[in-house]
Image (spheres, rainbow, N blue to C red):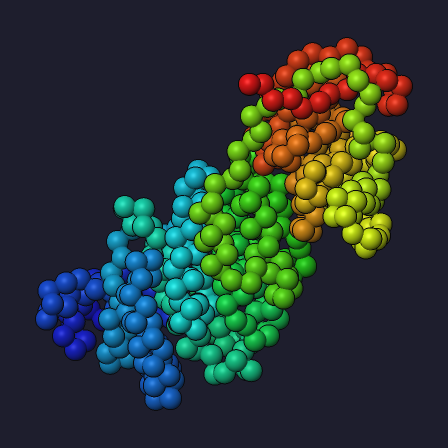
Length: 438
């Protein structure tokens, strides 16, 4: 279309862009004297009476959302959809951690409102997310992908609006394929958990500026990486809070049944501050080595179960010893044969601190036991003998002749003091304990 042409009472002003679902124009609403965006749907879509009927019903639901983080739908006119004109830039990373969390929280808030109405985006990607000059997130093209599916039982990649209607636009194809969930890539029916997968990728990109699985030269390469590879969580900035790392890992689980169940959980998690590190600091004292280093992970868990049973005052023997395997992070190996001192569970039993070797260098890693992957804490090279603070928020460790401390979420490492050479474990040599200074 050219400027000055009209669709109903909307006068075309200028073309804004073109994608898999048609061309987008800036237009003026001559009745209300406001600027709008009009997306001219492809003829194959607009001329299909049944499809347009479904699309108009979908638009009515979308128009009812009226949410500040979703671009408003004003109506459907003559094979075109009339939308709120959103001024701003496409979402892109990397951005500072605090900004990424703020954007991710707004995205989750908008998605939650749509999911509660039964609307699944199915094509969530940075190109469909705008950031206004005031820092407000706006989600675009809600429902378009869903409206083009014949039915939930016949979903396949060739019916994806981006792939089937933009076959000559390789960039657009790869852009969409890169945000498909594994089940979507396999052509299986999808639900809101596909949006949650795409959300996890977007949050990762906001923090790192790159895709967690990389992008191949072809659609096949990209989809294969999504289905077969695991995300590199170690590439996240060191200052990324632990709860944000856990959120990304839960969003990117390949089995949708194990994925984050509701995007509202992400909104709640991102609205909560990471628990502060313990106020006290570990100080070196002369004493026997920390008691838990005399036993492995399985024995420690069994001891915790026994203490809980004795305090309960019941004759119920409680759970028995729990044994499980914890695989090493890819590309790493045992730092030493003494796993009892190098693999230490947190006091609440939720995390495991471990010393492993990578490229011949030992460092401190943390593995949430509810997750499937561990992450390395930066600036902990040559770490040995880790031990937890009582509240589980900090880890003390030795490096050569120094005693140091780091928060479990990562960040700066504090050097607490110099220490003398240590004698073997169990011989009564130097140890450390946590104390609170009033």
